[in-house]
Length: 291
Length: 291
Image 1 (tube, rainbow over the protein chains, first blue to last red):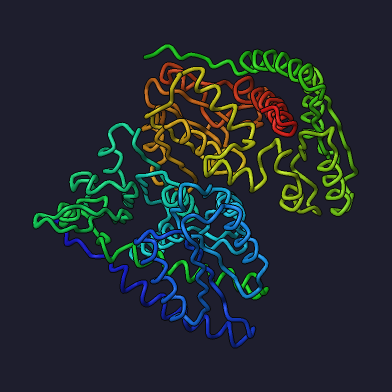
Image 2 (image 1 turned 45 degrees about the vertical axis):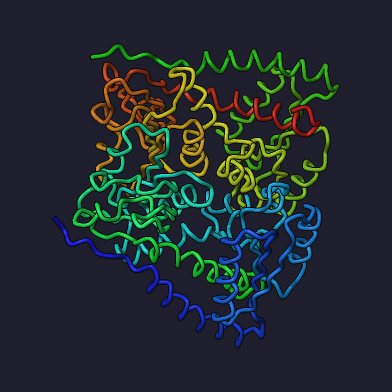
């Protein structure tokens, strides 16, 4: 029975944003340029509206310019593409984020492909996925980047550790595997077709849940002492009938087994926006040639 | 003790090229277009010259046009880039292959980045690496593609099998991991920093050696019955003092343990050119809109 350490992503993200604010101020002093993040929101999805508001607030707090473009749900795809192209051409905009999901009438892949890869702070453009895959400088998706930052904070070097990523999405699982490989971990990608998923998970020094299934990863799937990163944010009905958030890992069962674990909420979640801001500063530096 | 089956890549590649020849003929009949593969060779590397000659010969045998551009070793990088751009613009050229290694005076990454991704039949351009990573249609590197074809021929479905790829190069290991994941295998990427590499290999239903170290993977690293694909082609001194080719796997030791194994030579090697020809036809189909 080990004492399981809580990985406080909220506190880490706050510290990161404070350091970032200083870096932004230095960048503005040196270049006279204020990094600008443009966020495009199409439609009225309430969760998306909350995310966009939080992103805008934290962007401004970090000393950067936030530009929000809100379009009605029935905006034709051509108009969304035209807006993205205008933002590509706008030198005051260094990062462009199109909030997903887009309305079903719009081809999300076409919109993402239109974003200038140099301004693609979500890291979803194929050019950035390719640059990450071949080991070139890339803008890296924010959530996987946040996971690796937390892991390095807890573990120091990840070299030679067995990492198991459960889930193979383009947004988390696959780029996270690339980042862990870059850190010299031995990386396994497991998924819905994996045989003996509990056994595969039990091999992991670093176990990542990124499937979006509430508490799927049980306590006895965790190797004693492993570091567990829970990317899932699932809304479930609590015993009192109220909705509550749980991760992909059965958090209570992991206590006394995992060496360290991120809570949900307050673990990976806060890292995502902090990494988005970091990506925006990185993009601005590269665009003005100050990287 | 199992009877170890030999995976005859030479015979498989011959059958593949015969089918491809029919497909090329049908494509020429339907479109009036003859697929063209341009190969650029800079300098006098003898091994490269042999490869280029073989590629040219097999391209013509498949009914496609082969265009060889041989440049002296001291050709300035600008001239190589200008040639690539001319080939990009040439509608009779559907595939472009720049033979590696390039002379040290030339930035290989810059040359590869200049190739039109639609004509990048080696699949090394970041756009193709990215398209593969996110699951879009891509031109896929030839050697990994050949490995997966052999595996599917031996095993049928790869879904749920444990695959271990030893080696994480951009040319073989990393794209192969993506392809195996696309086939629903549980994929582990191991490498020089992996702890207990023998133990990791022993987990594999599918074991791939792609490190370029002669006979590094020993017989007792192989799970009984596993399918072993040996990508290594290493030149070593034989007992008689003559050079001989060996793979990354100790082939003799694997006998009676592996369920099936590719020999070196005659395993993966012949598949690479066959897949290059297949990629050239795929590229031609997409370029004329016949895909």
